[in-house]
Length: 283
Image (cartoon, rainbow, N blue to C red; front, side, top):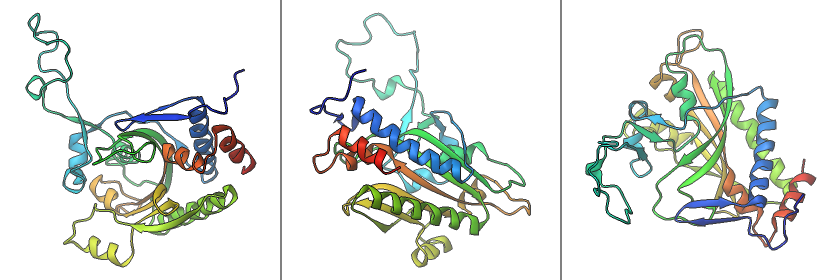
């Protein structure tokens, strides 16, 4: 079996698109295995969702109002197979908007949305934990190596149920992440961030100002490698997911940006081999 070369480049990126070589793949899988172990420990069941989300579902949560800069939309040719010979000049670098139909689907920007859309209309839902791993897409104003990508992978562990359960879910993972990073020797700290889901004029925005709903785990004060997110009953209301009393469920989730973990683990001149050894020793 081929061993990782000490001078191997574990990952490269161009225009926000990353290529993971064997060392980078091994690091992603090792970090994800740790997250998945934690997910199983708290009773989360793994699910795989479609790679597309509908525009209608996203509109139902005000996504395009709150995140207008992020969407990556999916279309199709307006006349598939019906173009005249020679209609596509060579070389064809792009497809013009006039050649496309209106977009009814988008690529997800977060892994958890599909879980809420899948459960839309679920009545009398018992407290539930779900974990999923998805490729996500976000338009960004700039891209930077593995730190800021157009396409990346995210592991999320999601809770749906009562308010106290949603809060405990996040507290548990904050403790687990802090302890693991201490063992790994990673320089991290939690920082309050802003979740713009809630209308700035509404009561949820006021509540968010008093009790923030999103915290990020920052590596060296600048790179968010994980986050914990409290949505209150926002997704329960918008997706009509109710508990046994008929009230909208509360939700929360913890997310791991897998390529960003690779960036942190390869910092300070670590090779993929050294980073993998560090992860093995920290089990």
